[in-house]
Image (cartoon, rainbow over all chains, first blue to last red; front, side, top):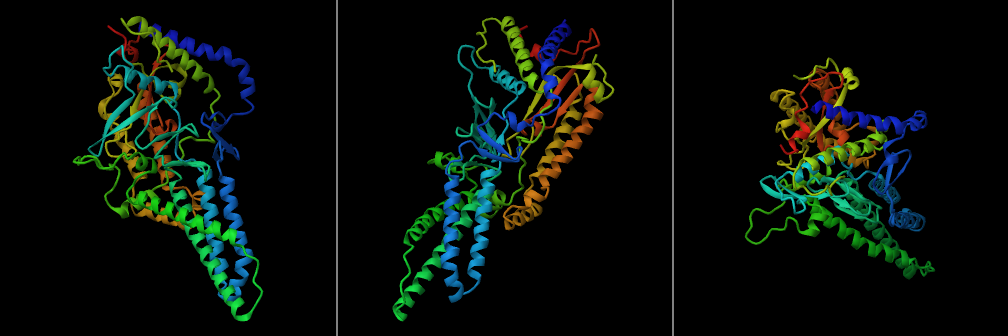
Length: 359
Length: 158
């Protein structure tokens, strides 16, 4: 008898795609679509899925513009003077730092930060089933948190209503990108992307190299001005027109970038994310010896190595994979299966509220 | 009792999907990739517990190897840092190599152990490394086979 039921479901599930699918097959056969084309988050893709960006690029053009303009001005005005008066290494070092900064910035912006793909209907239904049958009363909405033990410490996992899954530890849902991101640090508008597990090392190398770069430029500019003033006073030369506005930008940006680098160095050394630090997730409460960061290795060196030199995890969203031609209808067929399956349960169970939890 | 499938191809063509079981992640040791080895009740009549546990333990070992923080990963990380991470565009990382090994292992397990029992394991990477999805198949052609006792009976009131 159960076999007949399964047969029924299968016939319907297979029948629907077959009938609604007919006109599509002719269209789908010449060109298979890639997965990035149906990606549900708010992201933009370029180069056929190789490059990923957040939908709002934030002030990434401004960041790039400031870095490029400041560096070009440095190379154009300060380097000729310093090369003749000091050493030819100055533009070389400046050039290397500039390249490092721009490459790190582009990698931070254009890399998948560790986006978790959303749960497919079958998986979402299985999770719903587990939540619902885990002993909660029928008249209250089921709890949407799960408590687990990590290294003998209790951690609460929250259920993500958009992605339809329990978020793994350290994962957070970015509302700007509409994605769950693993080891979510923050969404950086300067970089125009989330900073997460996969691009944190790029972000860190970007801010550290930017600190060195701005400090280097500022140092060279101050040296240039000092030497020039010296020459003006001693040799009564004409003073060159002031370029103080750019030096002021440099001066102020140094402190903010240096401060940010220092903050992130602290985070790396204690294996924390900005998100956890801001929320105070692991700040030690008075008298409670249990709370503390469960992810730390209790050694600054190992924490740094694990975060920055650890293995590079792969992208989970498989942007360039091909959608199998029969993948799109099963989302609809699975819904049909799911609604018929839940409807059957509703009629079988006594006193069960009408299904308000279908996917 | 259980329907017999001789190979993976036969499974795909002659069987219909009855149910799916999801093996969740085990976070007791942190955020490294590990799956729970608890034997799901739906597979009770389909496969021996030891075979299932062996598969999951081997997969866990592979993932631990991929995420191991040691000499080789430091070398890879430092080399990448000095080249401004451009090397990631040219070179296949150790993680990717291990993922390929995992793919081959799962394929081999499906062919030798799971397909003959009407089961199919989906590579976790296709599900965002969140679950191991095991699909349970019924033979469409056979009539009167009663191994559909898994799945829906668990939730419907008796």
